[in-house]
Length: 174
Image (cartoon, rainbow, N blue to C red; front, side):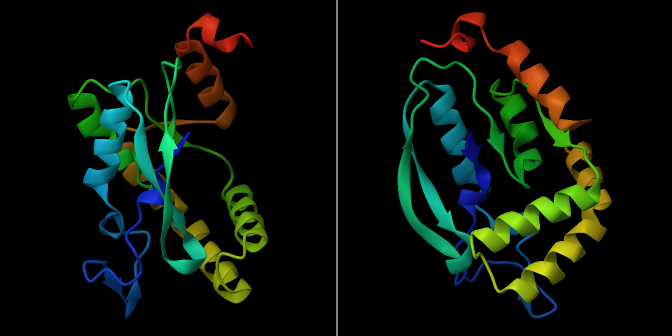
């Protein structure tokens, strides 16, 4: 799993998009599109890649990690901006599938809130307020992702389809 959220720009980057006087982390301009695409292309070429480790609470990269598929022939890149890479990955012959996860907005809100609180990403009040705003905005976010080429699907359907793309030998424990 390649977490594309790790490609966010640092919080002091002067090119970050601003909305109502604060950084708009939900704007595609808040992350490094080309760096994410380069990493995907490197990984798909069968070469290991150094990918960033981003700390949301610190609003910055805090290190790097090696991403190496080894013998695996398929990986998942996930994140709110994954759909922004669909056209480029398809043009480069790197795309096996693109999905927009469909589940009830309240489930997404509660799961995001539980994760963010447990990881202490931001102050609780901000997480509640921002999470609620994202829950209200979710239909538009989904529409945007689908407009960029991601197919709407439930989590179970996505897992089934991704498993079907994986050669049977790689699904068998070694």
